[in-house]
Amino acid sequence: MTNACVGKTVIVSEAGWPSDGGCNGNAVASYQDQEVAITAIYEATNGQVTFFSFGDDAWKNPDGPERHFGILLPSLWLYIKTWVGCARLF
Image (cartoon, rainbow, N blue to C red; front, side, top):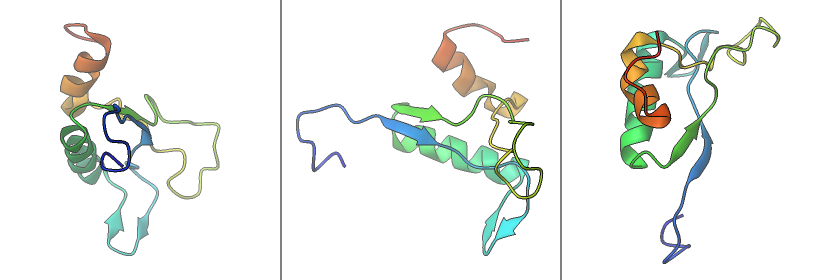
């Protein structure tokens, strides 16, 4: 994308990884894999990314990963702090 938009700032408008809801081949929906994915995405984009979403969406279908994209995990506070510019959320 950066090569296609020379001279422009590229911001990934939606990214994420589920913390639960099963597997899709080698893609595992777990807290550990979510942390790895979110960290890698954040670092690869130099923080120019919006993660979907802050908390899990309990109103979505309980079957599968769609309701488990919330990133409100203690291990990800570093990134949350960076986004909101606060010292601690809790």
